[in-house]
Image (cartoon, rainbow, N blue to C red; front, side):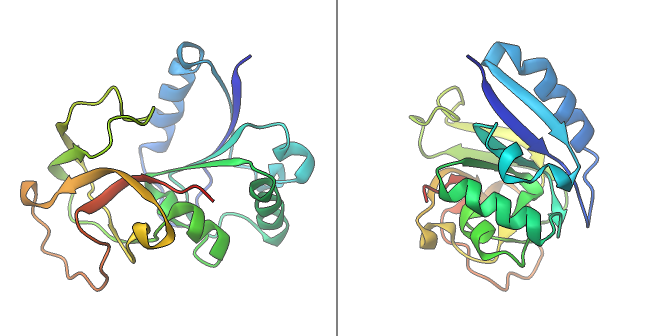
Length: 188
């Protein structure tokens, strides 16, 4: 039986151009990874009855306040009974008014330098999401800086940014810890 994931890509702030290609990539990969995705930007899908159908909820590059109080409450109940949450990229800039999402994300977005070549280091190659990755790889991306260290809320960091591999002229107002966390998970 395939895992069923609700992929939610609504935005109420900045909208990444990568959302639509990400959806297409997930559609293409779904059968080969034994996952069935339902894609939506409809916040009315966040009800107890609907969320109970899913093995996980995927926030795909969301930003801003993308759920009303009813949707937030349903999502919290889903998580409270053991539902799974996956946040991709800009998901760390969504629902900043919602403390339980802050705990799920691990740390909220602060800023990023310009898109540029950067190196990411795998610090845990035993996790299913990282075991196929090389120890270090170069990519073109935004290296997110966060408002806190996700390890402070118990996050396990899987990927870190090699800060010597790119230029960041921005002013960091927050300490997100060292080494620079990029990929992480939180067990709640």
